[in-house]
Length: 454
Length: 131
Image (cartoon, rainbow over all chains, first blue to last red; front, side):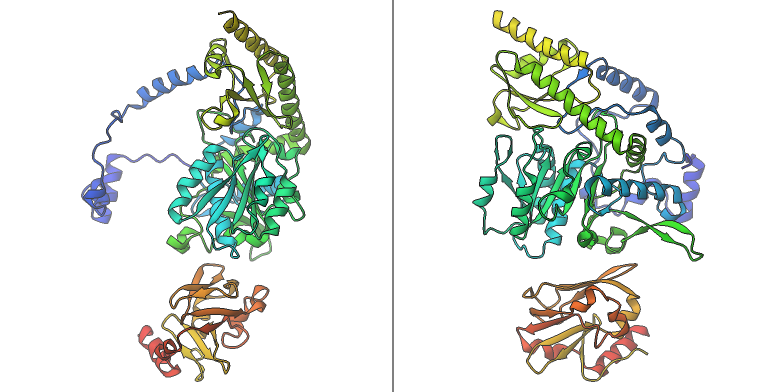
């Protein structure tokens, strides 16, 4: 897309054309009571040069550390071609153009992305992406409540194994619509199947599970999916896309598979960069496709029979349905999807599988190294690429001591999962080397010995 | 001019209502409505047993361009829905008053039926709307 600056003369001409005096006039329909004049605590605007200096200084603080933190965002090796191609001018826009069909290349890319997500999850219908994993999960809960017409309760069961940030964002989004999230407890790091049987006979629209769980463990997806379907509930699968190269895809969960899969697309070629931008994905069974929010690209033929791509199933989108649209808060993340599509194309099915295997092997090596240290326990035995490491003393000082050695030790679980005691969530993806894993184990050993001696 | 059968009742939202001998009512959209919507690709009907108040959106008819609500013309319980529409939503276009019916309701207040328009009033309503 071209860069189009507005000169003062351009602005004046546009305003004159619609009969407005100044830009402020364009906002005069907003009642004064709703307008904010000052933003307390927000500093004055900076010039471009000042912002560049500030961001360089901030960015330099990110460098030079070896990160063992996952907790929802995962560092993977990204082939250089991914961002070289994704940032070409033809792709370099975050949005599907408003006259979407004018950009056949963009639509084809999204179509390829949808095909890829359908292949990874086994479910047939993918949308063009959503903001991020948390809002994708919120949309999946809203969709399940709309789609499950046998359920009247507007209640959704959500496992405590689902990312706590996703749960809190989703609660904020759905609560205003009278939807209640009911927590399913964990036992041994996984959704407690005994807790389910106590809920027999109660009305819920859906059961939501994360695989692997936020704690890195592997869920009993088959049993829980079958239980949910036997009780007229839908199943929402929150998935890590890398893990899908190894674990059963949502379509294979239980006898008939999960109904909606969603999650964070960041592991597919998006760097961990100060919190984003990332992208959310959502895939579902054909029976639910009309309840799916967001844009969907379809393949068709034009009047002369030539193949082409078009937006499809738009009848319930906000530009047509207004306040009755399936969602008024979603968009797609075109640029991130472009990178993800190129990343998966370059790796291929085999490359993605090898990446997933390397992540698992690295995490296993780390777990084995740590298990030999006094005062350290690996909490759960089944995991993909993330483990809960429990310590016999406070983790905060330990994490600080490792940070001073250039190692980010993991995500401190004490606020979100106090029942796990002093515990870190630690991840070793394919981006970590054996040397780095050895250095981590050695550093933990040393720091614990020092604190013992002190 | 679109077809407006004499034996039916009508609403200003372009729904028709047919009183059955067993006291139930069959509901559909008028020839005028199907013409305005264009070819339907999907019809979403309520679950059997669902309670609908007069004016509630009880059915969604979807064309390639837009999804539109069909409002319950009377208060009642959904007794049945037209299963054929799942595979052939275009029946609503081809036969809006017969094969393309949407739902059958058991009305809870038969007095509400008196508030509906007869064919003559609906025809006048359409002419007024056009002029």
